[in-house]
Amino acid sequence: MGKFIIEGGVPLKGKVRISGAKNSALPLMAACLLTEGRCQLKNVPQLVDIITMKKVLEGLGSVIERENEGLKIDCTSLSNYEAPYELVRMMRASILVLGPLLARLGRARVSLPGGCAIGRRPVDLHLKGLVQMGAKIEVREGYIEAYAKRGLKGDNIYLDLPSVGATENIMLAASVARGVTVIEGASRAPEIIELATFLRKMGAKIEGVGTDSIRVEGVRELHPASYSIIPDRIEAGTLLIAGAITGGEVVLKEILPHHLGIVLAKLREMGMEIEVKDNQIRILGNHPRPVKIKTLPYPGFPTDLQPQMTSLACLAQGTSIITETVFEDRFAHIAELQRMGAQIERKGQMVIVKGVPFLEGTIVKASDIRGGAALVLAGLAARGVTQICDIHHIDRGYERLEEKLSRLGARIKRVEE
Image (cartoon, rainbow, N blue to C red; front, side, top):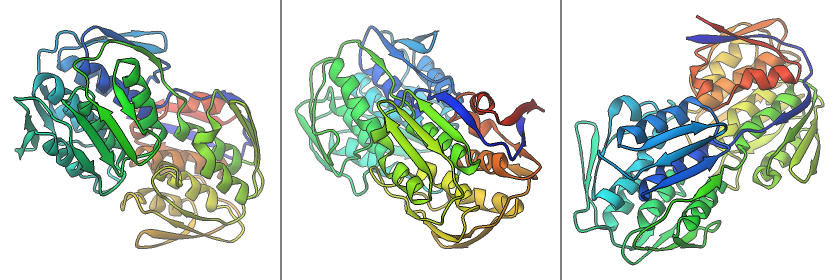
């Protein structure tokens, strides 16, 4: 286990390049299961979750090579239809192999997924959609056992919630199913658009992405394709908030600003000076003003940036109200921030944050990816030294975070225990 040691109080300054998006790379890796031959993915971040998905695909018979900042994935010889517990328990996105395995092999056995402990994230929407397409599914002994001996057939599928994962799994399966599948209530997230774009390059027929109604006309087969992963909007948002909370001046390079519309609006509302130019964003930190935030599916405020914004609100001059509507347990970082002197009161799915003049460095523990990032940001702004334990959670979602922060002037180092 490793930990970060941070000497706080240093305004961040400089430019930083944003890595490829983990949440885009993972479904694109799963999409490679749908075709024979070698696909190439570029700008793939080197993260624990990417390594886990690589192991899942290799366990199914895929051959994967890491080359520079990309992956070459050859799924010609799938020899297995089971994604085991020891891998799937580590990362929820492993469930995305379910649809492709059913579509290509007619059978799949996938462990119920794990990942961050941030609340209930049931896979019932995934399963409901696949059942409507003709799959027979049973959940036994912690595994999803699915069969589609006669193949999958398109249908009209209605999602009660705009689940990103369910939209992805159904879209993957529908790409090679018989007939037309219409997904109503689909996610509009950028990662959905990227998956559809990649599938189109492979020969899929998909319309309506970016809206809540996606139409997929199944084709007989897909072919290999090459694709470059989009910049990670959550890493970008985290580093913007790092500049804000330290009162620094940070420029993000190789970013798609339109993916961060609501985030930029809220940072401006808190008094930050923001300049957007082409594929760059510059933020100049000021003492933050209080804010009201409510997390919602895209294009609403992302739940994956709620903990980081909570850290920023801890230093605002006034009272902020932050409401979490996506994951009911995404408040594990609150107790750790309180140890640093934050004044936060939780009321159900809402927290009331009364700003304080400063935070104090102490020993804290990361319990999930984004909560861990929130503690890093708090440590950057705090007086004294902060030790953050269990940083393996942070490594699942951020590529060499401490190196990027160091290049911006942060006094942060990784210590292996």
